[in-house]
Image (cartoon, rainbow, N blue to C red; front, side, top):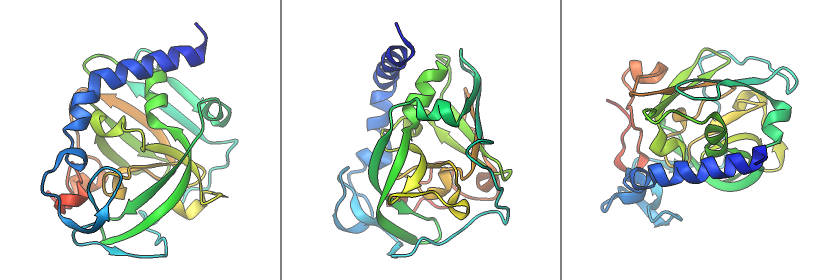
Length: 227
């Protein structure tokens, strides 16, 4: 079995293992979501409660914008997995490349609709790591010192990407280029800019903003902004 076939098989196992938990996440199961406008593709109101649509893409970060070239960029996979290691740009490009039109919801109350992202499904990268059976969560780390937590039930959704391009252009430095993570079904702080490492955990742990009062779960359709 070649490497791609192994990833496809591991991806299928992960989907089967987490399918019920993914379906139970609020953005897919909430019978009374808060928001307005027509339904998105998951049946939630397009604009979550407390959000305003913008046509600009504001820049928010920790005040540090690390300059990392494609040649320098690395992504470490560590923690509870059988295949820890480091991916470089060439390794990222070896995964299936996808394009997804997704909405982007910032906890600071703005949303931008229909951003066209190109990248790799996080599901495939996690499948390549062959995570342990007891793994339930991940911690994502950025080159800027940022970190944020995510359940695997959220991380394995097919619209969660490691993205390097938006609307046909390379992802800019200010928006987390060369590679950032996006989490369209959660507030955007759950997707690390300048992503540098993913750690697989057997319990939920707070990241940077979670330690400072932000929600551990970050569901926009419940205004789940703060703990």
